[in-house]
Image (cartoon, rainbow, N blue to C red):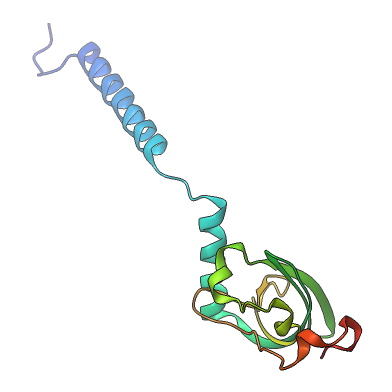
Length: 140
């Protein structure tokens, strides 16, 4: 019989129980943690670009209900992309074609393909007067 508080066998049971308890706690917290939805991740991306993105010039070439397609150049490379604006409908003009033409673009300096033309706190959109009544190939 050992003279210590715990025997080797008792210490093994205690440490095993603590380990199992720690694993259970980690699993519970992992399962309860709310993961961000794709919409939340996109909103965070827009906020980050609007705050830290480099400003450049571009051109809006097409406007659909929930999408703006645009072109812009960075260091000799032309990017042709689009932005989903379904969450930003209240920031867009009623006459969507009035924004076709010149636009401000914010992009990530390290990844220029990551860009926006509008966010919750910033917009590069410029309404073109009379653009909506011009034929598509004559719009500015």
